[in-house]
Image 1 (cartoon, rainbow, N blue to C red):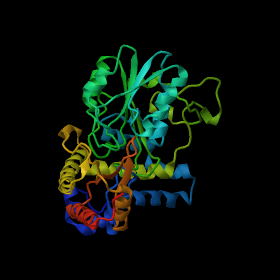
Image 2 (cartoon, rainbow, N blue to C red):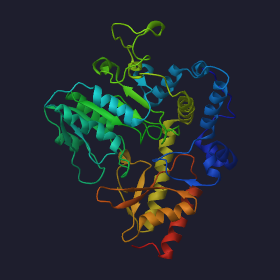
Image 3 (cartoon, rainbow, N blue to C red):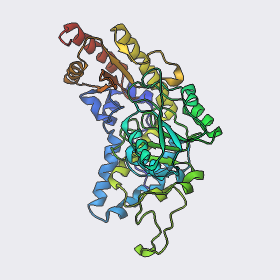
Length: 403
């Protein structure tokens, strides 16, 4: 793996204290206040540069030969470091939807077995599981007292002796409620129940340990600050043999000299789920984004995000906004803050913020109630957060945004 020179080791303190450095490393900050990292992130300059370097090499050689500079093993190792996993437990299969579909289709479930999912999760973690009904699997939908608020007791109260798997998100995409995956996973493992986690809303933002998790998927285009479609799939080593790949190709089935064999033989690690040619352009960016997160440190990032959350929540309370779970415990807090304002047209307010170059997300719950979702990352400054609050106050003061 080629080590490209860096100007300096990045820390959050350096980024926030040097505006020229911040805007150089995160060009989006030159013109916008970007507070929508729970959606699709802008690329840091280091990530864009890594993609460009690979493209330059690929113009003058075989694309795969050019990528030897970006060892696939090194990418798995960088991903494993973030998850506290092993490189051989990491598969590079693309989007979260693809990764979760691979697990849902490959896990061995029998007619009459049941699984537990949360129907108000992001659709990527709903549809692959709902599809198992065609195989006679019973799909139970977790009931919660409030949107996105899932507790250990909720899960334990809704599993039984026929439950074989529980599939949940590490953090709810709308409510921002962060799951205690360690506690839930430990209880499920004690009962012999598999635990699959959609980790896209915490990986890169908060520690997301897989100690008690069996499967985890996360694309890079949110908190990892990487390209769309360059995700990672964690599969616990002890379970890899029992998960049958649903996609087969030259890369994950033994074919010496590219000659098809009489017997299908898979690699003995997570590569068995990587069927064909890798999206090398995306993986070049993924490696750079993983290294950036590891360089700054996930514990440092999570502490900073919780600090920023407090600033935003306090400002929204002062503006009489209706916030989802503003007073959740520290273990359940995330950098996703969703709010609505009774009687106000949130879509119009969202547009007004965008016109002021403040980028947020517009989302809705099952009842079609709309929310503005704010999701800062570590490089956003306090000044940007205060500007967001000031502009929102100005918008509301005009009073032209009611239904």
